[in-house]
Image: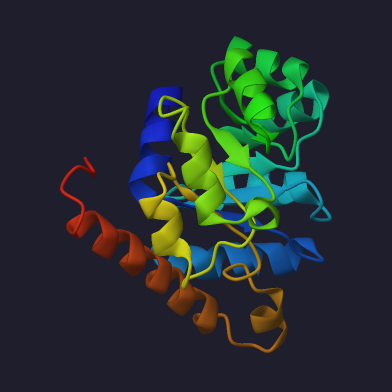
Length: 222
């Protein structure tokens, strides 16, 4: 898939679940529960034990999912993830060398930033989309809106504090897509043997996104 298609899929879906877990098995179970809820984009963080195996397995067995690698802190890790099939790279911070290697191989890169200076630095370094993290620490959707006012050309994905109840606010503030963590990728549901609750939450997020777009004529979904 071309980088432009990856970014288009991400925006169309409107959601980038951030997958963490205590084991490879748990992470795969969460990923499949999210996919069962209709979400076809997923970020596997490098904090998951056996993260590369999770990426490799999802790429091979769940081709409908757009699989990315998260918590990538350096270009070496980014390249290894690409070789395992990751189609986008996400980081909690901005590392110019990581951005450079992603651009070299035409892989979408979403570095993390928080302040206006950090956002502009990441954008000028070649970021495709910038992850605003932790968004909740700076005021949530109101902060995102404040960033978008002087930087409407920069695409932002808020992560941290995004829930079903706040999703509409973040979309209204101008989010490119929503980064969602444990509120969706809930390891407790797997431990309790109720993965269907994860699927139900995924559907709730997708409904919020669909409802927002239905009432916002200026939003293009194609």
